[in-house]
Image (cartoon, rainbow over all chains, first blue to last red; front, top):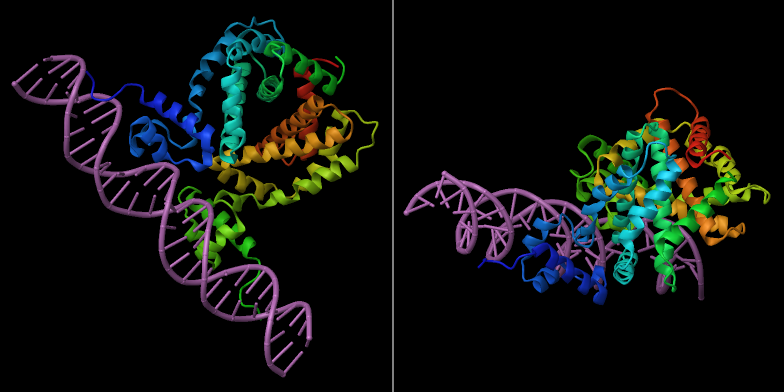
Length: 189
Length: 189
DNA sequence: AGATCTGATGACACGTCGTGTCGTCACTAT
DNA sequence: ATAGTGACGACACGACGTGTCATCAGATCT
């Protein structure tokens, strides 16, 4: 038998989520989190560089998702087609069925300035990875940057509205609605 | 004569900029900054909520700039026209002549993770203010959000490229070039 | 002119964050 | 068996950020 219970990072993540939901992220301390997880403060900072980081563990799948988006996009697709099909076929399915969990997490993130900022960095990471993918498809630096920013804007906006709605409308529908609204803003094609 | 030298916030800003340029933002401490400015640590946190905030004092003009953009936009303009004319006539002129200062500041910001994150929040504030302006012009919530995100993307991208270039090309030119590239990504109008 | 108010600053204490360093001990490989 | 390896505990410590009270120049009031 092992000296310690396994899954230390997971336990810290769960403990932090529960405590933050109850008391607010700013009000809880790292020692509180580690106490609930049965660990010490020092161990927390071995798993996470930062108090906030414990709520952003899901980011590890980001590169894989991004790779899947570009792997599934035939070379003849336009950038906007890559975005729309990628969000519909690869990204949106990963959100389905997790609405309540995501809502809880969003509530915590939105209630804390530091966490909101960290969430913006996540958006930035997505855009950076997307820009790299578009450059690999032959787009210029400028176009790749803009395409990736568009994609980040669409998915962010769509997910936000999806979580706001009371209906069970699929995220893919809202993504489509968002791209339509975007076209009406940029001008008729 | 007064008990203290005036312009405490300005002195702190200057001191922080100089020290950060020389040693890196992470390596300097608040006591170091306040010592150079002839103040105490406690006073620093009376002027700035956060160590990083001392490098973001220029944000106070943001609401005024945003108001000017929308005040100068006739109601018949499309959202994209509001963005292009606003950036060209109101925003870009505010950057001209400050290239070297902005480059220095950008070097500091880009070299520190915390400052990069704070810079993302600035972008978010711009987008939020822009969305409010577009809503006031009668756009739907969704369209207003997307239009503002577009504007933030364009100005961010354009300024970044403007600072990268060796030529003295005016920012307004690069803004135009960016909007053209954006159209080539979204599809022909 | 003298008393009073105001507001920026100094001085001090303190809790939390995040890191450096070293020791401990189950597990693994040779 | 013996020697790693790697995750965790224990401890110290510097830096960040806040609460609280005292101080004192300048403005306001009487």
